[in-house]
Image (cartoon, rainbow, N blue to C red):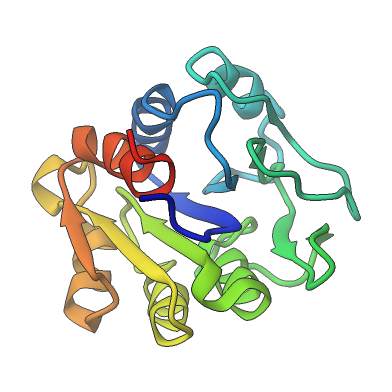
Length: 191
């Protein structure tokens, strides 16, 4: 049964390219929600992550511009050196505000803004990583009525990030990496 979900937000650090590509490869072309991704990257990194992930996705993947409209069935990847936020009018905001957890882009910044904008119409997914960025934001999504998933520490290249979310009680579901994409497809599309 298809859920009324407007967006899926995902965050990762160490091991994120593998995690994101595995999940995106499992999402069908008719996936009904927008997908917004934050991968910890140094500000001087080149902006190729969206291009790399597009090779695994049936959905269009791009690094958005500031104030770009968020469309269902599209994947938006935070560009290096910018926090990617969600505005209440379904647009992206790119910010150079201070790093959070030593990171810009920050997972928490995306999760807090999306949780505020979408409430129960949001799914938050926290993946592999070596710090606790994302656990507070994921808990905020849960408290706003959104659905929350965490990659199992056992299937993570770096388990610190998922463990922090589990300890905080932010996860409604804990799944191995290869189960997350099919779970999202079933949860939103009913495949």
